[in-house]
Amino acid sequence: MAKPESDLMDKIVSLCKRRGFVFQASEIYGGIGNTYDYGPLGVELKRKVKDAWWKAMVTERPDVVGLDSAIIQNPKTWEVSGHVGGFSDPMVDCKKCKARFREDKLADARCPEKPSKRPGECDGELTEARAFNLMFKTNVGPVEGSGSVAYLRPETAQGIFLNFKNVLESSRVKPPFGIAQIGKSFRNEITPGNFVFRTREFEQGEMEFFVPPAENDKWFEFWKAERFDWYQRLGIRPEKLRLRTHDDDELAHYSTGCADVEYEYPFGWGELEGIACRTDFDLNRHSEASGQDLRYFDPETKERYFPYVIEPAGGIDRMALTFMVDAYEEQQLEKDTRVVLHFHPEIAPITVAVFPLVKKEGMPERAEEIIEGLRRAGFSTFYDEKGAIGRRYRRQDEVGTPFCVTVDGDTMKDGVVTVRHRDSMEQERVPAAELAAYLAEAVRSWKRPA
Ligand code: ATP
Image (tube, rainbow, N blue to C red; front, side, top):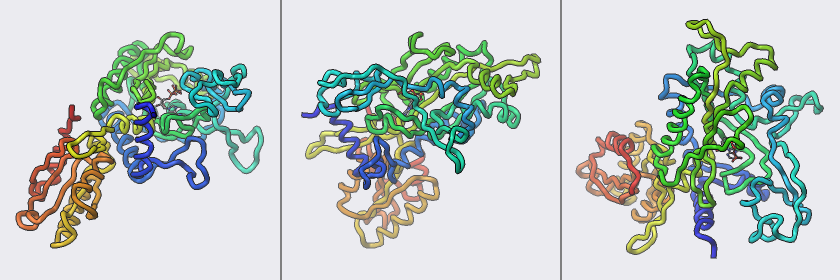
């Protein structure tokens, strides 16, 4: 029998495919190693996670601006940042089955031939560890050769450092301030896995927060608390989250501190986001290598200095997976089991579904009018007129739609609709004219059921 925790991941993977959240990429050609595409509901979930991140990190902050830098930068970027020389994982090969593993993650790995055993504990012998660079190489322009080699970025952060001066000169910012961006990063992971937790192509939400060096510790504490809290504000259960401070021997040589927000996944605790002190390492190095002075000049103190940097860096795909895993519940009801995703309404792919009770007596037309009004008010909506009403509710529960609105015979007489709540399954009668305001308040005041 499958272990309960792996069972939960299997259920989520199957729900993702069945309901159009996540598909295997290039599936008709047999896929391509742990690469995924997001379907109609998955793309909405991810978009809403990104919107919530951007809102908290940029829109609602007076001290952070946004950026969208290129994926392929001048290759010098990655030499100077240390990625060409040092962005590698220790890799071992199995001499028998030729499979490759990360030496530092052997405890989580399984022999592909004997999945009950770990690599090296089967009959296969492992090679000595070798450094394997995780960057994807490509060629820019029509001629291949050493002069045209470039890399797909393995993190979005460097694009921010390269634009530090541009942002300073074009915007009215001064330390402490941040530059944030969301975008794709690429890492040729030796052992991707656990569905979209670790893939070779993924999206990151990163923010570099530049501070006067003396304020480093204060801002490190601030961003650790803020990022830890953000997940809880969006409904993640606090008992499933922890903040793990890195030991000194885990820190990069230039770093003065790092902490990870970790989540307890069905496969164990894993990093969801890192908050790192990068000091002035990157600006200093890029300044030296480019010959451009990337120091900040403080007009008040007449001092020129390299700000220190606090970096909250999270994976958007990992966030989406975490919201999904955390939201999933199978509820034992009197007659059957109900699968429900308790998404925070702000990140639910569909906020409100509208149903005519039956496909006649003018109800579909009235429901269409109502849904059109909700769309114009900015809600993500879904219309469904097929099947018994109870089954339609259940289909929405399974994809995490917090509210369903039903148009019935009474609506046609008195203009009042039924609003059914996903979490409590309670129903309320609400005048159609007040529906948009009612739903906006319900989204705002939502609390995760205990
Ligand atoms: P790990 O130890 O899991 O390899 P990392 O410490 O190298 O991650 P960072 O470089 O700090 O990760 O990247 C910041 C965030 O980007 C991580 O917290 C994670 O959410 C996300 N991330 C990193 N690698 C991947 C990946 N291969 N697939 C999906 N998300 C990733």
